[in-house]
Amino acid sequence: MELYELTAHQAHELLRKGEISSVELTEGLIDRIVAVDNRIKAYITLTPELALEQAREADARRAAGEDHPLLGIPLAIKDVICTQGIPTTCGSKILEDFIPPYDATVVEHLKALGAVMLGKTNMDEFAMGSSTENSAFFSTHNPWDLSRVPGGSSGGSVAAVAADEAIYALGTDTGGSIRQPAAFCGVVGLKPTYGRVSRYGLVAFASSLDQIGPITKDITDCALVMKAMARYDPRDSTSVNVSTLDYVSRLSRLNGLRGLKVGVPNEYFIEGMQPEVEEAVRRAIDKLAELGAVVGEVSLPHTKYALPTYYLIAPAEASANLARYDGVKYGYSHPEASDVWDAYRQTRQRGFGPEVKRRIMLGTYALSAGYYDAYYLKAQKVRTLIKQDFDRAFERFDVLVAPVSPTVAFKIGEKVDDPLQMYLSDVFTLSLNLAGLCGISIPCGFADGLPVGMQILGKPFAEGTILRVAYAYEQATEWHKRRPAL
Amino acid sequence: MRLSLREVEHVAELAKLGLTEEEKERMAEQLSAILEYAEMLQELDTEAIPPTAQVIELQNVMCPDEAEPSFPPEDILANAPQAEGGLFKVRAILE
Image 1 (cartoon, rainbow over the protein chains, first blue to last red):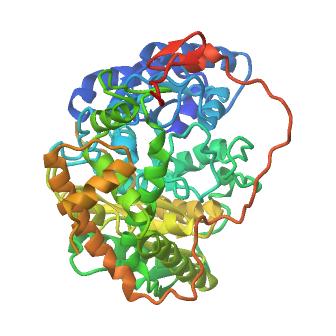
Image 2 (cartoon, rainbow over the protein chains, first blue to last red):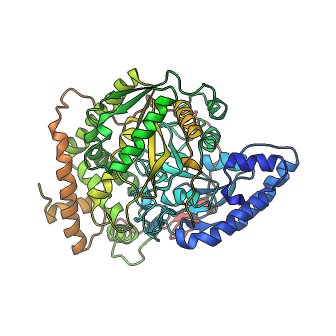
Image 3 (cartoon, rainbow over the protein chains, first blue to last red):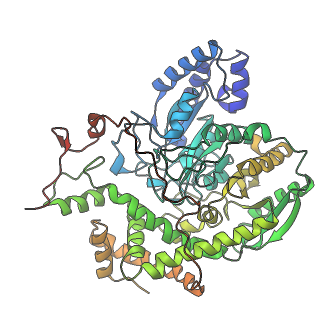
C-alpha cells in the first residue's frame, strides 16, 4: 500500500509506532499530486514547502512525546476558507490576489493540532454551483471518469481525497456542496448542524445556510476531523455553545443498529431519477434493516418546494454578502472608471463570473421593493413549513435515509448552459440546510462504474448518531474500499 | 411572467453590477425561467405561517465590552488596491 492511500487513522497508527514519519507521508502526497493533478486539477494553490515545514515540526512534536490522531496528517482546504499568508481566491477573479491576514478558526484549530497543509482546492466561484465548472480558473475532473464533473461546489476538495491527493479535506456546504460531490466521487462528506462548526474566516455566501465540514475516506476519519473542529467560537455569533461529544469513541458503542428507527422519505424517490441510483440506495436501506434498524416510510410533503425556496433565499443572502466586493478594501479593482459608481459597476462586471452575477441579480430582485413579499418573505415562510416537516418526522424516527443526488456524476459541459437543470442536481440536499439539520453522504454502491451516495440525515446536533449509523453500514460493506484507477 | 430589459437594468443598477447588452438579454431569459419555476410557491397558503430567517434559537449575541488586540493596519491595507498614508484610497464621492 502506498502512503498516499492511507486514511488518517491508518497513518496515525504508523506514525505512532514510528514506522513512518510525517515528512515521508507528506512527500508521498506531494509526489502523488505531481503525478495525477494535471489530470484531476483539484488544487488552485499548492503549498509543498509549507507542508514539509509543518511535517518536520509535527515529527519533532511527536518525538517530544506529543500524540494526536491529526498530528502530521496532510490535508487540503477549500479555497473559500481563509489561510493566513496563503491566497484564498474563492474560485473568483475578484479575489485572485487576495491573501488573508488571518486564519479561519477551523484552520487555527487544525494547525494547533499539528495538521500539514498541502494546498487550497478548486471550487465553483463563491461556492455557487454543483459541478466546479463555475470556477473562474478551470474545471476539476472526476477521478472515476475524467470526462465527468466531480460535483460541487467543493469539487476540488472531494476530488483531492478521492484521487489520494490529500488524506482528508475541508469543504463547505450551503445547499449540498459537500454531500453531492462526496457522492459523485465515492467518499465521505459531512454537513454539520448550522452553528456546530465556527464560520469565522469562511468567506460568506448565504449566511443562514453555510457550514464547514470534513471530507474523508472513511467514517472514522470523519469523526476524528469533526471532533477537532466542532467547538464553540465566540468570534462567530452564530456558533452554538453545545457540548462536544467524542464522536470517535462513540462510533461503535452500540451492537449493530438494534432498535434504531430509520425513516425513508417517500418524496426523495422521484420520477426521473436514475433507476440504478434508486436501486443502490434501496439496497443500502435493506442493509440497515439487516443490521437491526427498524425502517419505516415517512412523508416530507413540502419537499418539492425546497428547490425554489432555496434559490430565492440563498441568492438573496448572497446578493447582500457580495455587496462588499467594491474594489476598495481588497480584490480586483477596475482601474479606469469615470466616477465612483462606474468603478463599482466595472469592477463587479469584470470580477464576477456568470453564475455569481445571476445569483446577485436574482437575490437583488427577490429583495427589491415590490417583490420582497412575493418572493423573499414567501420563501422564508415556506422554509418554516419545510422545517416543520422534518420536526414531525424526527418525532418518529432517529435518522432519515435518502439518496444524495438523483443521478451519478454528469458530463463536463452537460448542464452548464441550463442553470435550472444544474440546480436540480441539489434537489435532495438543500432541504437539510434550510432546516438546519446535519447530514452525511457515504458511498453505497456503483452505477455504470460511477459511485452512488446515500444520505443519512439527523436532528440538530445529532452528528454522533448519523456517524454511528454510517459507521455500522461501512463496517458491513466494502464500498469505501474501492478506489478509482488513475 | 417575463422580465423586461428595463427591469433587468433596474435590478443591475441596485446591485451596482455592470452588464453587457448580451448579458442583459441572457439574464432576462434565465431569470424569467427561474422565477417562473419559483411561482410554484404561490400554491401554498402561508397566511398564518411565520417566516424563518435562521434556524438556531440564538438572539442578540453580545460580546463583552473589552478591548482586544486588533489587526495591524499594514496587514489589512496589504490587500487594498490603493492605499495612502495608512488609509484606503477611494474615489471622490462628491464632486
